Image (cartoon, rainbow, N blue to C red; front, side, top):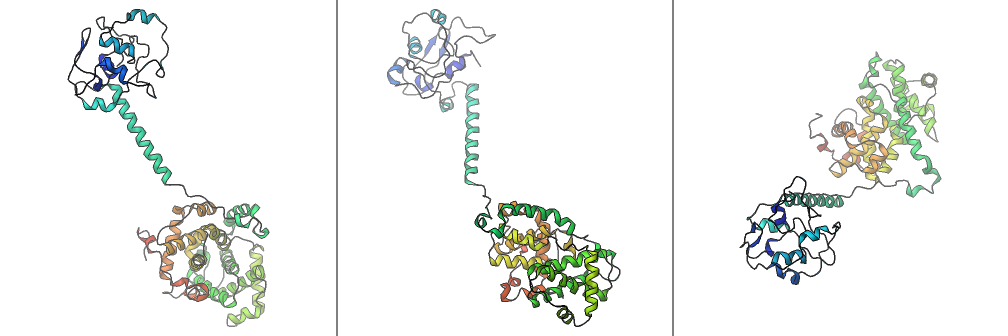
Length: 441
C-alpha cells in the first residue's frame, strides 16, 4: 500500500521507538515495549551498513499515482531511515525537504556508505499487536515459507541419488570375441528379428490330432534327452522353436509327433553342436519307434517347410545378455534358466516374445532370491522392459515354480534338483508376486 502511514511504520522497528512521537497530525503510540531507545541515539549505536539493502517500497520518496499527499505530514514517505531523517524525526533542524527534492534522485539499490538503515524483521511485527501487519510483510512470510519448502525438496533429492547405469561391456573392450563395438546393434537386430521367429499363441487350434498337452509331454521328454546327451543350452531352445514353427504350418498326426521332436533336435544339433549325435542314437533314445529313413524324410520335410531358416533369436541369446546386465552370479543364473525352462513346456507362454521371457525369468529369479522386487536401471536399459511390463509374465512364472515337481511333467524339476545345477529347483518360489490376487492356482 504505497504512500500509506502503515507502510511507513513498517520501515521502523518497534524496538527502536520510545515514547510518543508526533509528526504533523500523525502520532506514534508509545509503550510498545520495554528498554526502548530514542531515535537520536540510532546513529551512535548502529555500526556500518547492513550487508543487504533495506526494504523500500517507493525509492523516489514521491507520492504514488492518484495519492493525495498529507500536507500536515512533515516527514518523508517511503525513504530509508538515515542519519538525516533520524535527526529530523528527533527534532533537530534540517534543511527544508522541498529543497532536497530538487536534487536529482539517484536509484537506491544498496545502502551507501554514508547512510545507515534498519533491517525489517518479520518477527517484530508478530511480537506486537498495536498495528496491523502490513501487506508486504505477509508476502515476505509466504515467500520465506516457499523458499524453505524448496530447500527441503532439494535436500531430499540430494539424499535420494539416482541409480547409475553400469557399463557392462567395460571389462570386455579388449576381448575381440565380445564385439563390444557393435554388440548393441546385434541385440537391436535380435529384437526386430524375434517377431518373425514367434508363432501364433493359438496355432494348436489348426491341428486336428494333437493338442497343447501332447506338446508339453514331448518337450518335457526332449529336455531329459538333451540333459542325457549333455548338449549345449542353445540346442534345446532352438529345438523347441523349430517344433512350434513347424507345427504351426504343418498338420501332424499324434503317432508322428515324437518323430517331429527327434528330427528337430537333430537339426538343432547340426546347427549348434560341434559333435552331433548320430541318427542311430536318436532312434535308440526313442525306443526304436522310427527308422532311419523316416527320420531323414522328416528332416527334409521340416527344413523345406521352414525354408531353411534356422537362424532365429531364441530366449537363450537374450538370457546371456540380460544376465550380464543384471551382473548375475552363478546362483541367479541357474535359477533364471530353471524358471525359463519351466516355461518351455507351457503352451500358454507362447504369447510372450523370447526377449520378454528372458527378462521376466531373470526378474522372477531376482525376486525369488531377494524376497522383494529387484529390477535395476541397468537391466531396464539393456532389456528395454520396465518392471510393470514384466509383471504379468513374472507372475505366471511364479505359479509354474510353485507347481513344479507336483504334476506329471517333472523333467525340468528333476534336472535342476541335481548338484550340477545347484539344486535350483529346491528354491522357495516368490509367493509375494501373487499377493495381489491377479492369478490363482
